[in-house]
Image (cartoon, rainbow over all chains, first blue to last red):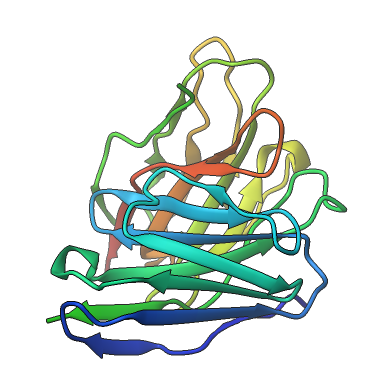
Length: 114
Length: 109
């Protein structure tokens, strides 16, 4: 059973702080993703990675960066948090071994930026 | 651009009534389509995928290429079906999946 974990369920940060969100998966998946989930907007892709040290911008990368130093870990970084980054952040992983590339999600991190 | 559209933000039905959650996609080849579900306080998870032609928890979804739709249906809704439902599509070339805005289903007793 795939397990995707995220380092925090809830975070409260102040404007301008640097924020790290960590995601770990234990199924040797090649692909990892970061989304933000906002009411009425669904899931929007921030960044994704298809291999170690590889990263690709998603649909809303501005204000974010990522790091994938190990296959199982994908970090999302908010360089200088702003109030409009208050959201639920979801990490997901998938594998090419599954031809449909079903995504497996973490429990989410709810971030509040004050 | 490839898109997934869920026209209803909220759908409210009575227990035992049929339910249909709508999903339309922009045409491009042979799409890989999915329904994901998020129950209260649980993580987002796959409900079903069209390639499997499966019925999960009584839900089915049929791909209609003529109408570019992939509506999710269940003949008799249950209270435990109350959740957020997302239609999704694997983009051509793999890797990325795009999601609709989601429909919140509320099943009333």
